[in-house]
Length: 208
Image 1 (tube, one colour):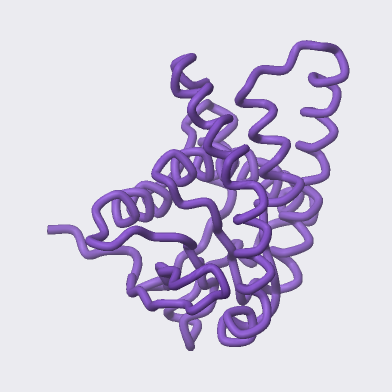
Image 2 (cartoon, rainbow, N blue to C red):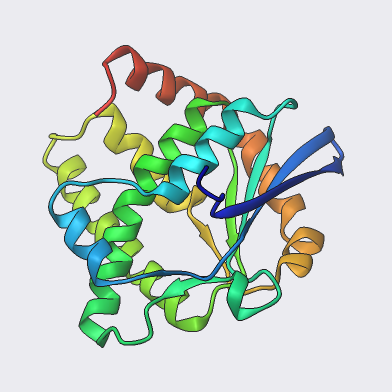
């Protein structure tokens, strides 16, 4: 049996709207992404074992999950996620872009399960900056399609994800839970109906 790549636990969060449940995902080993991921995504091999494992956990968890918290640092280098250190600056930028393309598909799978919040914490500045640049590049591409009248419902959801739902931070996990989660749930409460409607339309159309 293959050892899990991730350690997963949950805890309750008390909000003004009631009790919410957070699923905490921490690397169980040293996970590094690099050139092979760039090549795979360019070849059309979307997603990853890590994404699949998280989706499986959310879909089978005994309690409804309201937010997924992805930790990039589990307390040591041997329990962390990041980019391969040998990547060039151009490769770092390309990896950030390709990962964000993958993340859009991953986020849509999570949203379809009724979990409307995801945040990644503990990122280094290198990974964070690459993901931000990847987000900006994808936003320009989606905006061009929307402006040309060639956008699908999935494009509309992707654009919303990039504008509001793609939460990457260098803040430590404990700090984000204390200071960031309340505003995240406020955002979710404001837009949950729209997310559910967009997701239902995409499902009716057979996805993308």
